[in-house]
Length: 482
Image (cartoon, rainbow, N blue to C red; front, side):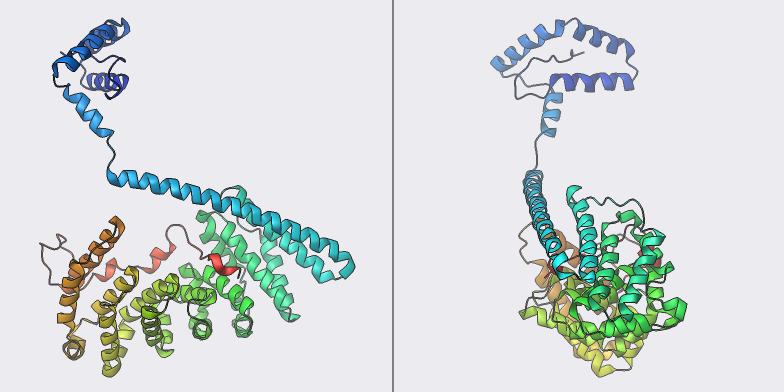
């Protein structure tokens, strides 16, 4: 048997100690006890060191092949091009991350100086509201500061206490009665700051606490008057504050049920109204779309979307994005909402009874797949088209040359050039999606025996209960402050 390898060797060879350990590990596993004892004794007596040193000199002079174990372990250390690129990207991300943290610290330094300046003016102003405002700013600044000093890791391990929740609700109603818009904004944003700061695994429970405390006084009064009045106030900062908090609540199925208590869709209707009034891509519009996308998991809200012309509005937004820059979040969530709307039996029946409108929708969606739209939106558009590829829409399919245009798209998309590995993965995903949704079942395309002809199984779609699984994500945008 070949003896174990010493610590001495050429610098290009794998570490000898590591090879020794691999060999001993194998011998132990295979119960080669005697051989193991011999090799350990030889290593300890250092006899192998001189033998190996001489052996390597012979190898270098004669060109004798190295033992295969050298080559095997040496090859493990060779990094692929992808691994090298990932390491470079990781270093860049770490550098940017540190720059962001440093910028955050500088911002806090400026903020603290401004607060001190305001405090020096407080005595002169003799304004009670100013004192309370400064205290609120201090609290919120302190919470953000914790996030910075923890380098972005949430510190919160406990939910908002019952007392704090009650105080927030009391202050919110008092400011509402006093018609103090700034006060209402502060309370709403404070609740949201708490939601953003809390650890991800506790966010679901936070939403449940907001519902249990009936923060909008919906269940206690069996009415929506309070929240509707807040949504009706024409103040952009207040609309940002209220829609961002509603978006937090709508992040769970129970939250959507709270917002549509007893089947009342007034909040959904108000959110749609605000959505359409906003500038394309604005922060408030993003929160409105987040609310509507999350709520769309409930089929009972879909008729409200349809009758408020959300199908056409979303199609118009995607059309506008072809020539105008629209925030990626708006396009992603809007197109996902469109897919959820069209998927429901209610919408399909509605479109079946509106042949001209269904023809218009199909035609516009087919045009999008050849436009330069982002991949996530393209996928959602293809999913929408798959729902319309039914016998009920045979006339529209023929008039729009549906089958030919899908085939042309697949042919075109199959040969597009991809700039990087991520783009190549996106391309493959799109083509796989088309294969599953538009082609007859073919084992050469898919080995699954569960996919039905011409559509994805409905049980593979996002189910309502899945919204209750895992950690919640609360939206937060860099340009919210402005």
